[in-house]
Length: 184
Image (cartoon, rainbow, N blue to C red; front, side, top):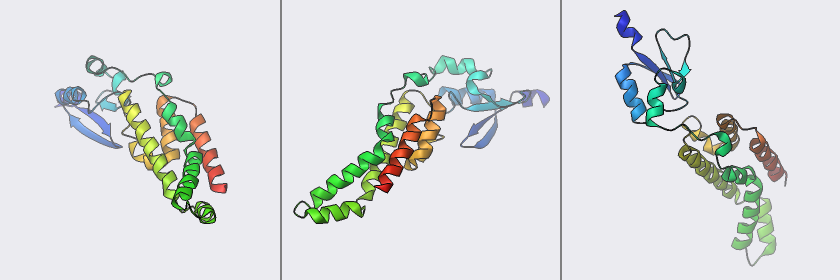
């Protein structure tokens, strides 16, 4: 029984501990991409949870999947457009108000000032987050932990910066642009 327990693995998924599973099952989870870089694992005899790539199963991971691109190599064009999305969205709201009320400039101004088209900025922010998250996934990052935050942009940007080991510049720019857009 003791020897069997030493071969049983646990892994984290969505903040919950999963397992025990056999080493064979763990290698199957690695091979099918369920477990990848950044996932944490533990088995009896280990002092603490380790990232999969730092465990004895890391060599299996290296054989089946390349590591994610280094944070400096990830293209950040979309995230920088996202950083300015509150201002871009506000300009789009004014443009749409003008298009909807093309024959009445005063009605267009009132509609824009009353934020009648607020959802345009919201949709823009969510779409840019979703697009950026897809790009990160293609770069090899496990975005499962912050994928659901695309609707709450500052949380997404903060989580992204931490995951890629970036400074918080685009997060701070988004906050400043949001404050400017709300106060406009």
